[in-house]
Length: 415
Image (cartoon, rainbow, N blue to C red):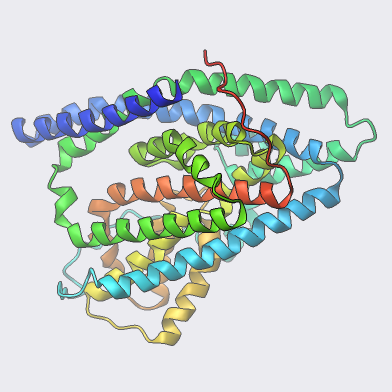
């Protein structure tokens, strides 16, 4: 079933591009937009279904995972190892983006003046402050956090609940049983939702190509191609690190997560792939308690593809306007992005928000954001897929350190 699902996803991607191209070349712009709007209904419904299950799935799996860990010291130990990996991965991702944009020089030669790009970027930076980020970590109401799918706030609340359950002498068996049963129910619901994924993938690609034309893939060929080459190198580094720490078996993990990775790529949404990624990690052998702990944290703190995009896109904009940054400024930029990228979770169009703030900090033309908006969705597809790979390998590495890698599970029964 897993292999069939992968082929259905690939087929949906190919058919979506083909249908989108036919719409674009055969219909007037206004009619093409109308057709695309109707197609996006399918994608919107799918993403709403995903959002519907994210909050209860994260809460139940994380609470159950922490409760089974034992005492608070074990939670703290696993947390330190997890955050340590995230920090190293963040540094590698940001630095790689910096190095690759210098080697490839995708923006050199465009020579735009600061006024030549549209200034209207529709990027909301109102939440991008230290105070907002820190206070945003703690929910004022768990029900409000769940209603808005604030994963970071749900993680904070779930950690408190999980630690509290594990600290009780009998571990509140009724509550723990209810949470575990809730997790099983949500995984079953996930199976139902995932059956609709190929339809959403087809609709998303057909709508995007239908309105923008297949030319959007080639308009920024050097920028897009350079970024995807950089993503490929990042994948290679992550996989090599996984092989060094875990062994060759990590290659099977990469193969096993191909379906959620394709799903994230096609829908440009890491959230869409979360439930399936969690399932595949456990099938590969990551223990439930480690996968349920590391993966939600990764979605908040370990967005490797998004972090690399921040340095790559910021320096691309500087190159477009012919602005050179000193080595000291670039090192400062890495440090700034290292901190600010951790506030991506829960912020709409997070990468663009971080880039816009970085441009303002270094007095670079903020209108440069408009240059990358045209292909941002295409790039977001690669970022989302990379985030899935990065968080999967992170989960496996932490499981290895904790000696929590088990024998591979059999293919689970699907409804």
